[in-house]
Length: 100
Length: 101
Image (cartoon, rainbow over all chains, first blue to last red; front, side, top):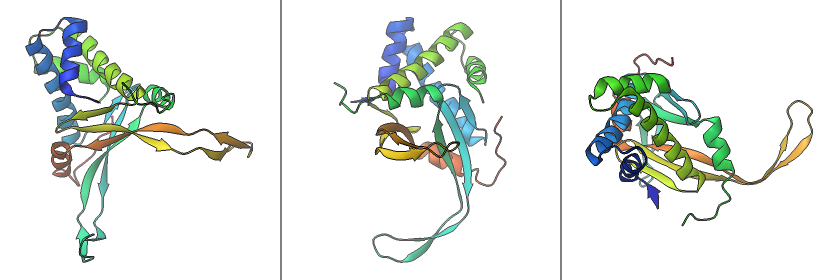
């Protein structure tokens, strides 16, 4: 089982009483705001949850894993996530048993 | 962007919810995501990315101050893999300024 947007919509509906339409719009603009912020070159710090950071990588030599041919990996910008204190502590406490 | 700035920006983007409801909703969503990972569940948001857990084997660590050995138990750590849309949109701005505040 994975948590999806549909689960978050349901949670906002049952816990906060948002109607389904409002809840769905909210979940969509929530993730769109995070994307748009990172796209604009701004990093994100959500205390307790974690930080989304941006890194520019230089071009580097790479290989086509199938053919072994050398092909350069182009310079790129990537998003990295660093979990916050609360998230880290909660996940460390997980004992590895499969959630039902 | 911090959590409170996110809340303000979401308020500007839509007209139905009060700032109070937005504040509560943002916190509820982040808590739901933390709770899911805390019970070993993945999170999958199309176009944004997925969160999963990576296993870390037990190891002997050292206290950097005293040099003493300490045995560290195995554990799980959160891992984020950006989705295709996020990856592509962010990469289009490669080389432009990055703002961290």
